[in-house]
Amino acid sequence: MSGIRSALSGNRGYPLLLAAATLVFLIAQIPFLNVPLFWDELGVYGPGILYMVDHGPGMLPSALPQDLSRGHPLLYYFLISCIMKLSSWSVAAFRLANIAISLLLVWATYRCSSRLLDARAGLIAGLGVLAMPHFFPVAGLGFPEMLLSLTVLLALEAFSRHKYPAYIAWCAAALFTKESALLVPLCCAAWALIYARPRVRGILVALSPLLLFGLFLIIQRVQNGWFFFPLHTDYIALSGPKLLRRISKTIVFVCNTQGRSFWLIAMAIAGAALLWVRRRQFVLHPFVPLSALFCVGLMAFTSINFFMERYLIAIFPFMAVCLAMLVHAWANVSPRIRPFAYALGFCLALLPITQIWQRSAYELDGTYRDYVALQQEAVKYLEQELLPDECFYANFPLYNSFQDPRLGYLSAGHELQASVVYDPAMRIAAEISPPANPSGNPDLPPERLIWERQNTVVRVRIYRWD
Image (cartoon, rainbow, N blue to C red; front, side, top):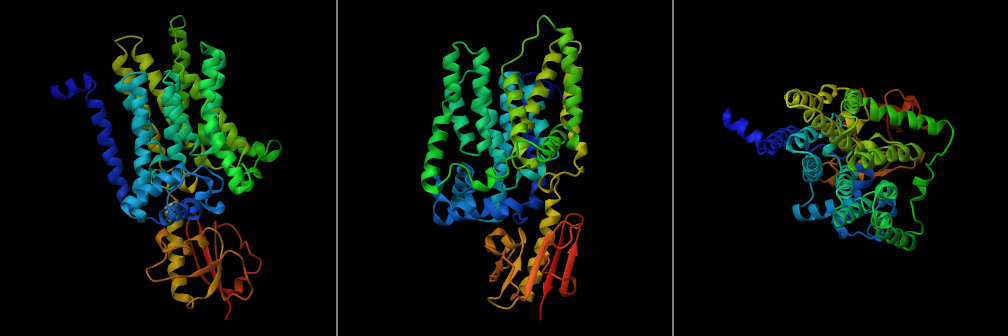
């Protein structure tokens, strides 16, 4: 016992505790490694990565067809496809590559907090990310948001510590992961405009990664004919009821869903009390306003653009670091309250895990597995029902299940010709939708229904004309 206490007092034990938590997390992921691809990873990211596996990885816009890149920068596709070429493609290997990026985010959060504060605060922040209910289900999914969260966190932490070469490298990586990283240089430039000395140098450093991203956009304009994917720009809403609904959804998701209200209430009370207790000695680290600017900016960006909850998960590592900062500040108010402050901090870091059953988006609450399971059942039925080389109708994302056996749905030796465009001459039609929705296609009459299954998240109907 004394050895454990000695290790913890010397900060050597905290990485071991986080490593143990990481190992438990990794073991818990094993049953889900072979879950087939879901939604956007089935329709865009998975096929895009497989295209690079087959044709060679690349970072230029022309490295992928437009319907697979959707105009996004290609760093995520490039990294995962390189890993898949080294390990050979399988759904489990694909999931493990994404889990590795997610766990790098946990350790980056720990490392950033340790550098800004100490190892105990780093452990609180790392456990806070690991214990967030959305983190477990989304960690193995093939979306670029975890890589974006990792690179944005490291970029802002480097800029706050005036490590400008590291900032430029991480900010460039974030920009080549997804367009929403444009907020990073803008936030850093805004902070430098007010606080940096010399001011001009700080602004130029903050904006310098935009030169690389601008070059990417110019190449995209030449190769694809546009700067940003037209379908995405059509979703932008700057006024009206649609914008208000998106703002409301954004605030509720960030501030209330899956136990985050516990953190925000505790942080508001602790921060206000700390300002009162240390009103003359209170010093705010630059990382805090930079984080706040980015989080507010990302919420605004998501509100005016196409709204999906997972686009906002880059906010949550910053929330974990800020929680650790408040705990560390209170621990240094007095040696007598230090043990209580850290004990409360660890409890708060782990508290959101109690809300793991709260419903959210499919990919953030784990119900995507129920969606995928029913989709698999429908694919197996269609494999038995369809004639060789027969073309049939299927809507998104069921349609994408038939595009490549490596996506995890088709049995070995089966190749089915699905079409996302309905043709009355087709003998078979399949439709996937939420349980409460009526048929989305008026040409699919109920009397032709031959197979129907549903669970709490999805329904599949299959129709046949003899």
